[in-house]
Length: 200
Ligand code: FE
Image (cartoon, rainbow, N blue to C red; front, top):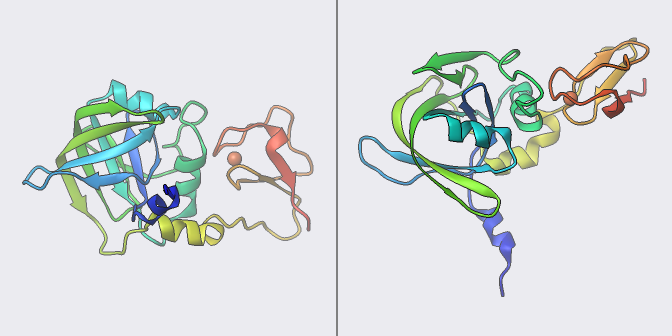
């Protein structure tokens, strides 16, 4: 018997991985050494642009998301590619050792890349803690909590009395009678065809 669903019972968190000019949401993060300069592992999907950025840069950061995170952070870093948009345009960051970290988070770790190894779907990167701080004494969001509260975290609200078009990928709302033909979603970068008219 090999019931792979047992792996869903591994407790994982929700983090924004930032590196170079991009980043993404990651859940596969763990501490793998315990001295004064702990080593942290993070797995990044090979098809993500962030994976390429991880290979080009020696430092990266992980920001720990709280349970009450601003849904725009998840939409921007989880549903869009840094190939299409500048993820830092709408999300506030603080630069530490030349790496952007997410302001609206519990805290951050800046890590120096020390090792990487490939598997079929992901690259596993190891980083040694170089800098880090806790900004807020709040409970971190687990991946399980995110899955259970996804709808309310990513809820789309539209203003009454206006014609609204909602991006079916990220939930961004465009107001206007018609979406322009050359329009691209400012959050996730998809074109007009992904927008659906909201029923009043
Ligand atoms: Fe979008």
